[in-house]
Length: 408
Image 1: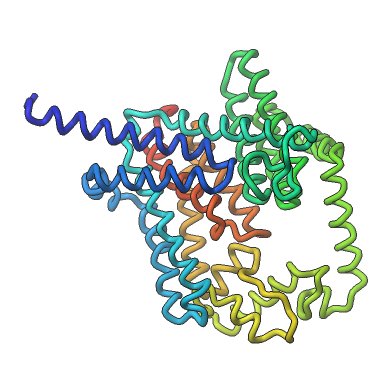
Image 2: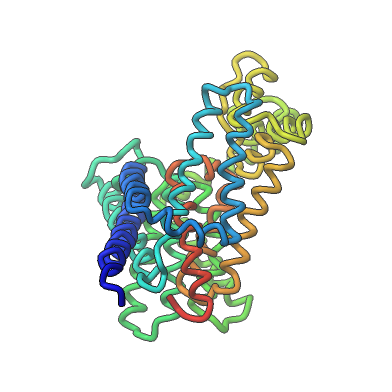
């Protein structure tokens, strides 16, 4: 071996190790808010760039199929900024967020044969559990609330709810794979902690995401169970959710909204006219209408707010996005936006599905499904926390493709 190459090799391994553990810290810190992943993410980018890892890994990265939809997701907002009616406002703000995709490239630059993706997943699960303990303390009145929500160390509940559902999915996978009953018991307890935290949050989208994806969890528990048995267990889980007073309160609000929808006139019921009781319908209707008027290129990056304000009666509240990822891509970038969105998430699903029996494959699959479904009711690809999470999921595709023949 060439002795002159040894110091360079050691530096390269050292940079990769540093990157790996920085990303592990970022994933562990995500449930506590946007500050920890932002801090560790920027630190990871600094290591990636100044260690020249980015330059050394460039030949590998350009050969990856998933890179091209990622680049499309990066470039599209800047193209949309050219014709946006809000270039210096939301348009520029949304376009600047494209740097988050660099996190995917940095994480994908770590050699998978030297580091186990399971450590990254474990860090994510540990951070969720640590934060959930503080959420429980808040619910019990033993720790101060943040914004009247028992969200633990962070604020808000929309993104956190998606994290918790993802955590339950991957924990159920580990239960299926482990042979130790002691380990199974610990993982069941972990899932119970996540479940408790989910049902004391206000996120109705999180509840619905859990309900829709619960068959995947139950199937991991009872791998050979028939469909009717899985359905019965899922119904029992839904019933358990309603033991929470928070869930009952939020469900009552949903019933009240549905009653209003059924009794209101067609204009208010379907969002053609704004109503505080039907604001989601109004956003969705506006986005669909604007897409139909601008199907080729949309209204531009961040242009939704300006166009809604321009085409709505005075006094209509400002709305920055349509609370739906598909409609956001459609109204912002037209048909090309829809194609890029389908290309991007299709690439994730195609890569993860054949390797769903591996830890990292199931993690990528679970996270993708959670983001896709919850994105029907929230702008997940615009949220800083969820965008960082999605970038990490993309970066972990390197372990997915490298681990096609083995468990990682």
